[in-house]
Amino acid sequence: MEQDQKILARITEMVEHEHRLRADLASGRIDGVTERQRLSEVEQELDRCWDLLRQRRAKAEFGENPDEVEARPPSQVEGYLE
Image 1 (spheres, rainbow, N blue to C red):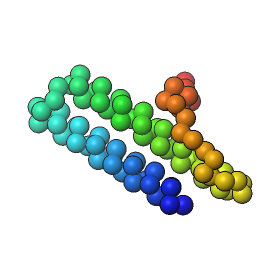
Image 2 (spheres, helix red, strand yellow):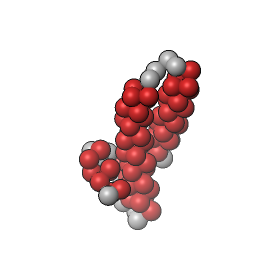
Image 3 (cartoon, helix red, strand yellow):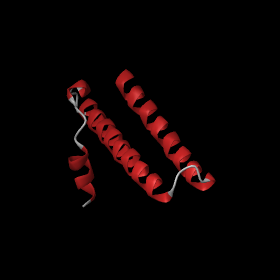
Image 4 (cartoon, rainbow, N blue to C red):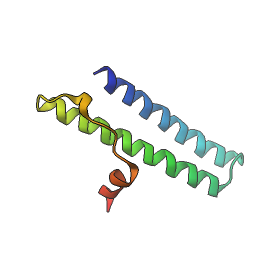
């Protein structure tokens, strides 16, 4: 479960980063194009973290080793939305 806590901490960091990006846009420190590009990167990484956490929890639920799970590439995780 220690690894799960690390993943959750990473998720929290990225959500905070997302909020900073929105604040930077509102204050004029970055433009809309930059904000959208960076938000896209943050959102992809968030999706990967949530996917990894779900995989780990599913393994644990069925008595398997959650440490065998690896983060999937963004193209695979993002493909679930289509």
